[in-house]
Structure formats: structure tokens, C-alpha cells
View 1 (tube, rainbow over the protein chains, first blue to last red):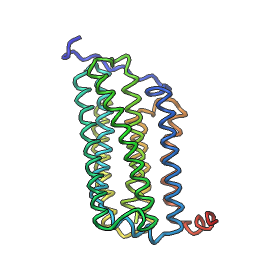
View 2: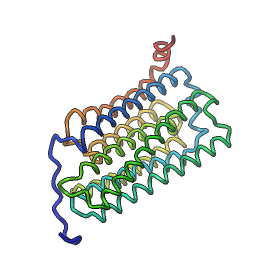
View 3: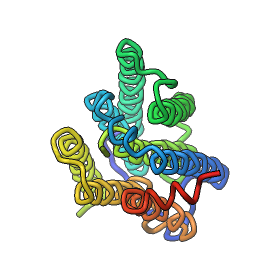
Length: 197
Length: 94
């Protein structure tokens, strides 16, 4: 098949497990870890409501918002990459994956600048309980993004070598599922830490 | 609507909701109504990613329910902590 010929996108089978069972064990562990950290957030907020109401005003809403756009866009780009490989458009798939890498790099850069800005404002983990929870949640999330970037490098190499086909792209789907899960965790972190006063 | 078009529109909607959320955080007076709006936005965004980006809408039921459940429970707890924070604080005092 030539690059210009687009194969029909096979419909995913109803009831299937996207990717593979192994990645879902990892994703559910990740979600459990974040659920526990969010539990800590809610309990700490209940004990120190004033500290948690005042906390977000000291953070950079711009950094939090830009990082949310980076995470949502990364999730969208990876969904498009999966869609492209189902249509046997390997180059398009690679281009979308490259955009995921750009979004992840943007997230890392913004996060590094945000942490640096925080420290220059005297915002450290020991300042009060809000910032302890803030650093714990955002740093844990950043580590999960880092794991994702390693996975992204792997699937980019595999996609480049032609390992994925419309009929067999479980590895790409597994990475996509993990990346979406990391996006989901951020979709809770952003409103709780940056928006909710 | 094709799957590809749905993804495009959802991306724009999610980005718009994010900008709207940031605007609320910066300008709205804190209160229960704002907390409910924030929680509902969190629930909606999560559900859209789970159903359409992650494609769990038609996938394995257990995975779908677990991932959707995350975005029922956490927005609900967000509102409940605002309403019953004192009770939660008493419950978790050693």
C-alpha cells in the first residue's frame, strides 16, 4: 500500500482492553497512588481551610493553565497518532508522536520555570501544608510524565521502524492509555491546586 | 460525526474549558457555587478523556467503570469537603 492510499480505519472491538493488561495494571496503580495523594489533599484542606483557600493565589495560574493545555494537547496528539496508524499512515503517526514530545517538553520547561519562580518568591515545601501537598502532587505527576517520555521515545522508535500496523499496534495503544492516565491525574491537580480558592 | 472530527472538537472544548477555569480561579468570588462549577468541569473533562481519547466508552466494562468512577468520586469529594470540612477534620483527628 502506498502512503497516499488510506486503508479504512478498523473499528476497535467492543469490550476490548486498549493496549494490553500489563499497562492497565500500571495505570490502575498510578490512579490509586494519585487517589491516595488526593485523599491527603482533602484531609489537609479540611484541617487547614484558610491555608488552602489562600494557597492558589501565591501560585502562578499562568503556569498551571499552560501546563494543562500541554497535557490536554499531548493527550489529543497521541489519540490522533493512534487514529493515524489505524489508517496505515505511518508518517502521520510519527508526526503526531513528535507533537506529543513537544507538548511533554513544554510541560517540563514550564514546570522547571514555575518551581524556580516559586523558590524566588520564597514558596518552598516547608512554607505551609498547602505547599507541601502542592510539591508532593506536582512532583509526583512530573515523575509520571518522565516515565511517559521514556515510553514515548520507545514507541517513536518502533513506529519509525514500521513495527505498528493497522492490525497490530497494541504497544502504541498501551503508551497512549498511560499518557491519557497521566493527563487525567493533571485534570484533577489543576483545579484543586490552582483554581479552587 | 467521524472519530477524527470528534477528537478535534473535544480538544478545542477542553482547552476552552481550561481557560475558562483559569478565569474563574482568577476572578470569581470563592463560594459553594464556584466550587460546584469547578467540580462539574473537572468531572466533564475527565469523562471526555476517559470515553473518547482513551476510547473506554466501548471498551472493557470494568476498566471503563473504574476510570469513570475516578471522575464521579473526586469532584463529589471536592464539593463535600467544602460543605462538611469540619466533620471530615473531626473524623481524621488522631
